[in-house]
Length: 494
Image (cartoon, rainbow, N blue to C red; front, side, top):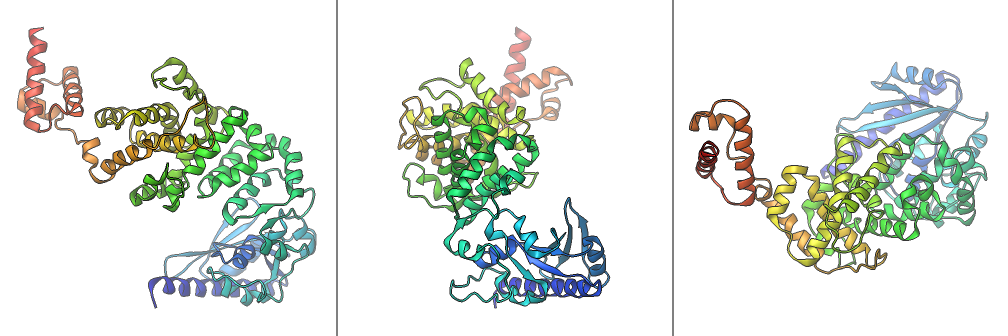
């Protein structure tokens, strides 16, 4: 048995224990419980179940406390539910969210849910039917082994057809945030929205203004973390949600380019693409690791890149417009500010990446079209702007790829951009010191070796030495000291 099998066995034991102890507590309290919603959907799709939702009669908090009497669980109170967490021997965690049953009956509770594929329930007493399906073992359409499944709205049939139907005509009006959740399900599980869902979504789009900006940000962050997020974004564009949320994306050509650029970034997660324009980046495993890495807020780095790609289409794409051109800079800053002034409140690192993509993406694309990206310039930019400069280079390749299907300002893609970006990335990931060389001197060196007195002149000399190092004119500490000595002498003579 390998480590993965051991992990599954440990998780299965944890879930069996947690559900068994919860069922016993339900019985002691004279209540009833049903496993509901997305965990059943995922199990039936053959997707590993991350957590389990439970609807119960009675008080969820009282039930949670009753479970804690017999099992080493931790309890967290959420907005609408109580979460039980149980650590397993393998270091993973089983999470059970307990919510009150709505409407007095399980069918009434399911009728209040968003989609028919989520309007599924299994009595807690039949939990053993679910356990074998929780770890990614798909089941055939003709061999469903959930005889006690409660499915009042044909969710199972829609699940097999991969069609997303609303559980009720008022589902999106009752909670317009479900429009954003629809996009995530389309991207994550390859669902196709039904015609009636599209109609109801278009009708409910004006209600998106009532959502908190934090809710919009969190839903879209979850969407942008998915490889196929562009499919979900296309749904949002098709029902009018994108321009309603982001006025800078109102023009159809801008929206099309933004979505095409985001679509090009899929290979940065999957490592595969049929598009030769972006293919040189797809095969770089270290790049996939770079974008899988978590930022301090827990989001993978790819989310921040995609916010940049999302808004970059609104800035001027006219050829040969340098990044320092006032019109280009103002448009970049305005697009970057859009994410802030609309109240999205991105984290500092996310906004830093977004901002650098918007300011430098177009210039890097044009530079890579004309020739190899100049390492000296990149060194200076990273020194000034930080590592998000690399994200801007990658965005340039995504933008260039997007021009093939969604052109802006009559610009055409180039087969040279991605290979030249890839050459730079090879240096960045395998010989980072070439682009971010460690400093050769500090203030203490100048004081000890050259007898300089503490003061502002030390900072000026160190800055000049660093510029010379980034230009490639010096490479050793001895050369740096000689350069500093010459600077000091020239300053004194002047």
